[in-house]
Length: 152
Image (cartoon, rainbow, N blue to C red; front, side, top):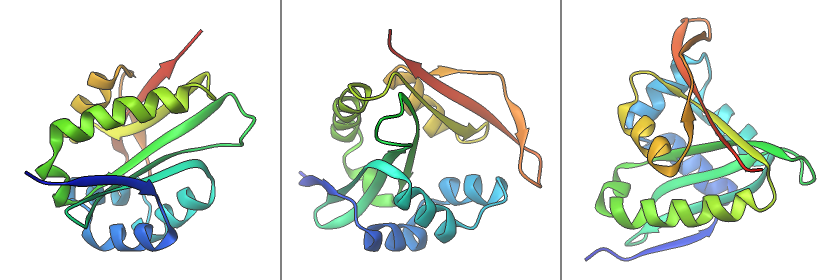
C-alpha cells in the first residue's frame, strides 16, 4: 500500500511538476497558450493556498487557490503526475477535505478544464463543482468548461 503525505507546496515542487506532469495536464496548459513552467510559477506566486502531495516520496500533485487573502472568490488549480494514480481514492478524499477548508475563506471557487480532459472533469464534478458550457480559449481556440463551486 502506498503512503502519502500532504505538505505545503514549494517553488521547487512547482518546478518539478513542470517536468513530470501528466500529458493531459500539459496539453491543457499548452492548448490555452501557456508555457507550463511560467504558468505554475505565476500560480504559485498568486495563491493563498498551495499544497503538494507526495506518494512514497514522489511528487504526485500540486494544487491551490489564487486570489487575495481577503477576496471572497478564487481560482482553483491542480496539476498531477503519474504517481497520483497510486492513490486515486485517498487523494479524492483529501481533495474533498482541503476544498472544504478553502471554502471556509472563499464564497466562490472556480476553475477551467479542457473538454478533452475527462479525468479532470469527472474529478471536479465529483467534488461538487458545476460544469458550464464550453467556450473557446487561447490562441488555439481550444474548448474549455468553467467549473464553479459556491456557498451561501
